[in-house]
Amino acid sequence: MEFSEYYVAYFDVLGYKETLKKSENDAVKLIESIESSIDLMKKIVQAVNDAFGDLTEKLLEVEYKIFSDNVLVCNKGKKAPLSALSLVYFLRLVATIQRVFFEGSQLIVRGGITKGLLYLTGDFVGGKALVDVVGIEESAVHPRIVVDNCILNELDSFKMQNGLFKSLVDASCQDLLVKDVDDKTFLNYIMSYDAWIPFPKNGSQIEPVGSYEELEKNLREGHQRKPIYNPECRKEISVILRKHKDFVEEKIDEFSQSSNDEIKEAKRLKILKKYLWLVSFHNKICDHVLYKMPQLKISLKSEFNEQTLAFDVSVG
Image (tube, rainbow, N blue to C red; front, side):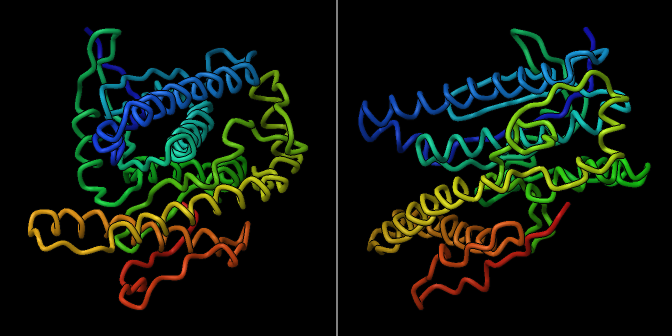
């Protein structure tokens, strides 16, 4: 038996049980959404590995476990110089999975990402990393996937090594990491559209990289220092922001109706708080410097104080 170092993401799907109870049709859509997210994940992993096919080892070695509403996604750690690249793509991969859950079945998730030792086989998974990531998920509170400090420290260490890694991490995380008022950093799933494109020159297709040296040369030449988002994504971003806006407004309206039953009222307020938090998240993304779509912001009724839930969007 041997433990290996993995990047580990764990999250649970909020509203999963309620969705299953609604109808058989809703249950089918839910399962299809989960399956489509896993299918997309496999395609992303294959695309990234194909783009870096001549490297000595696969850039992404991803395994996953799903039980009911619990999802575990693990990526085996790499040694330098591949470690920075592998981590960046894994973070964007998880954000994309989170987006697919929302787009497919309008489901939101809560979770965490960390790095540590894990024993992983086809039949069993265990280790300190699993214990740690479950703890992060439990403390996340809001519908967000929180990035552990050990991951943030690793990203910072890449920035300090030289201009190449600083350029790589800055460009990759510029639209991906969000810092909350409680100082916890989490993934921005709304802006993960080009997660599967490995540093495109023209922003439209995968361009194979023959070796790490070639990647390094391209980075140093400058065309890969730009943010890795496709400006044409603005249309797609506006679509998902509109869908996100309608979804959050509908949920706030649904859970704004008070109840005389104390148990139901406590549950209602707990759920309502999650969607009020999403209002702040949504509006800050609408104001993000890369997109600037204030026309899609959500306006709250006077009884809600959004300022108590506001947070800053910043680069990790």
